[in-house]
Image (cartoon, helix red, strand yellow):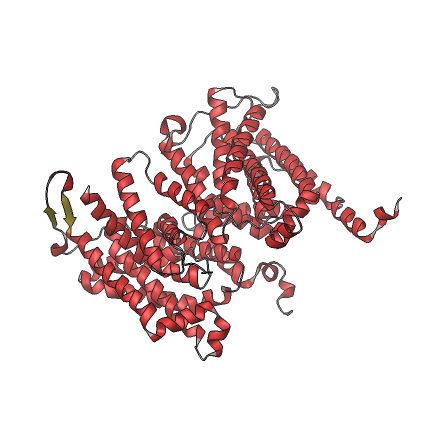
Length: 290
Length: 323
């Protein structure tokens, strides 16, 4: 029981890190970016390839995965995404699906379509068990590590968004671009760095999650729906919404697959549909929000 | 003639409804094609099916402005329903087609509840969700659908009791083309009717449509059910003419492809889906004969360029230098 809960939380935290960048682009910049998973895949592949081919230690790979995906995100934002901010949602959907198709085929071409195996360092492989019987809590060390990293990132993110100057600039740019620009905020730079940071987080999530979620070229398509659920169900006006949604989704998914494996992902999808019919703007929306 | 009938507005409405000179020619060519190119009958059949699918998406995307990422749900359900009906009940194609249409229409009516509220994002999500739920169902109910192996051994009876489906696919091509033409005429009639006008009003401004007294939710439910029925017909045609139904019918790439097809041909124009289907299938044929494994890359590149350059400019190069 508790083990499932624990695994669900770890899974949810991972989903949150993967999806939070999407919450920013989709919710704040109002851009439907289905290609978010491609950045996560980039991070995952950076890590796996560095570890396999160059024997770079795992802990060094994580920041590299972040930087690599952030760079990729930044370049794409500047060149391809920015002209599309004011186009219709249909255009944005088509564009980002196109990016996903390209990413999937390119990875397939350069790395191969087989699932990549990730070799975790020894100190992350163990497992600790506390208690016994129905209340037994088994904690894989790697999942513990994921929870710790993601929790630290979440706290940091919340701090940046609410307490720093950059956070207030971002919120100002999002609420009203024209006024923010008039106040002397360089909206383009703010959006560029936010998009790059969000892509970097996705890459880091992909690197952390390669072992848990599995990594192959179909990754962006396979997990696209999960990112979207997190954002759509959580609402996009804060980061606590997506966090709670990600935790809910993680626990529901792990528990569902454990107790009723016959139904598979069916539960998660149905849950999402019901929630979205019930509250189309997401579960956790602040009053008076957009 | 009363003055009301000859007003400019009535004239322009009548002009829109008139058939253009090239339309009968186009359909005539389509029906001659399986004769003229007997070795290509299979691909003509496929094009007709995909065109019907795109036509159905156009009703909700082009004419009503609903971005749906889960249209394959109806396509797949229609396909499975027709295949199961042929396998377990009776092999008559036309009855099977009706069963497929009916099943998809019922699902469409239910799913129309999901598109009433919320923003584009919410609709995107719930339509995608409905598609995925159907995929999961088809995958998990393997006693009924054959699961991941697909549903084999669907044998169709002769069409109208006379025309057998042959290996070369000529009967199949004519069958699909006939169904396409029938539904095209119905769709054409619908979008030119007052009902079609209300749909366009909803697409252009939902709030204004409500304000002038259009019952928006009812109209949305109606058009969604109708589009689902057409998509179901396309799916039924596919499983009937190939004698096989698999999970592929529900896959996400089908929903994405059909959207691409429609955008290539032109959204909000009924011939758009048909021309897009021809273009897409030929493109697919050419690219996948060059690089069979990586053809999605080129489709992706095409999509990105299409959006960045803009459809208007991509297909009308003489507009490049015009502002």
